[in-house]
Image 1 (cartoon, helix red, strand yellow):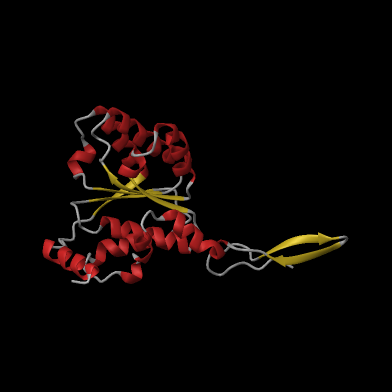
Image 2 (image 1 turned 120 degrees about the vertical axis):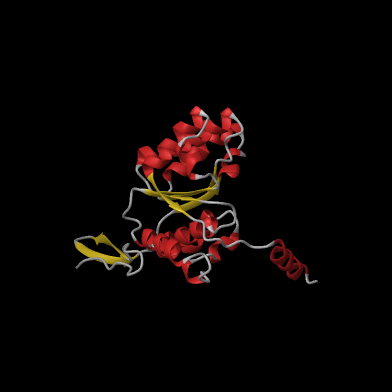
Length: 227
């Protein structure tokens, strides 16, 4: 008798054990049973857990959302990544969260981190951070390009990207950099990193024209304050 598997994540909900000369099937936890723990580990901000494809209001453009959805539907069976590039506030982080949440629902271990977060690690923690990011089944990196200010930052980012490249694990990257800045950066160190990114990720431009006005942002803040 074969152990039963979870219809959502495909992992066993039973495992075989032997009792003297008898084979028994006993219950075990599939990956879905630890979804909340993995979701907490994934997102640096709890609100990101609510940014899903189901929550899309249709204003980010049907084509780009559908492409991201199809990418997520192929996980965990992918090695290639996705590079979301475009101007600020165009929906890149929202789409990254949608993909991350979809992967979590499929039982994957996902980490979503921003480049400023990676660069803020203490010197003694850098090696452990790179190893942790490298081992995630799906890594979502936000704000590529924030590292350009220092040689130290560029080396850390290259190490993270190269680790993902060598492991052949999928990586979703978002950036405000333009197509030209990605393809032909002035700095040689950046060129090395971006070339590696373009080898491992399919570029997808996110420029839906949607922008949240300052008035809308302030209205949200005032509502939060109870004004």
